[in-house]
Length: 196
Image (tube, rainbow, N blue to C red):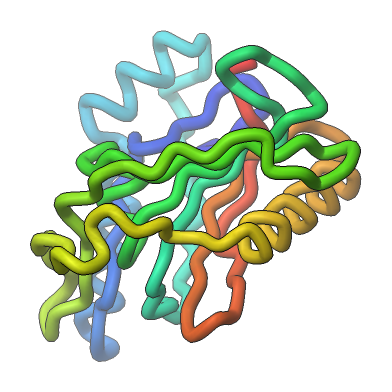
């Protein structure tokens, strides 16, 4: 149910990054499963008109991408609702702080019809999430990177092209999480935009 068409469930279930070893993975899977019936997740279900009787959750275990940059892409502009614009929010490091809203990201607006960068707002990025041996940690962004753009235009356009393809393949506007590691773009998650 996490990404039902009318309800995103984003942030309602627990996510664990950089889990190492079989026992630790099994424990993280159990905690994810249990988060489906947490008070917050059950309240969200009720608010969305979704049954709380037979709660099911799918859990994905995937290799962690040691991202230099993380991004969230909306294939329709969620601010002005334009279907011909997409918005990319990007920040340094792993996506945990970006998704959790604890960082102010760079914002790129791309016109889909001609793949032009309509605007870019480069934020002063103060925090980033990095891997540590037992999980992840928020640390200060190095001063040299704090006010530097996280993406060049080529990277932003590559992300836009991916979002356009996913939107066409799914036949609905999409909310995408992705990462760039050593110059390679990785798709991490794709779900319907529920806020349009």
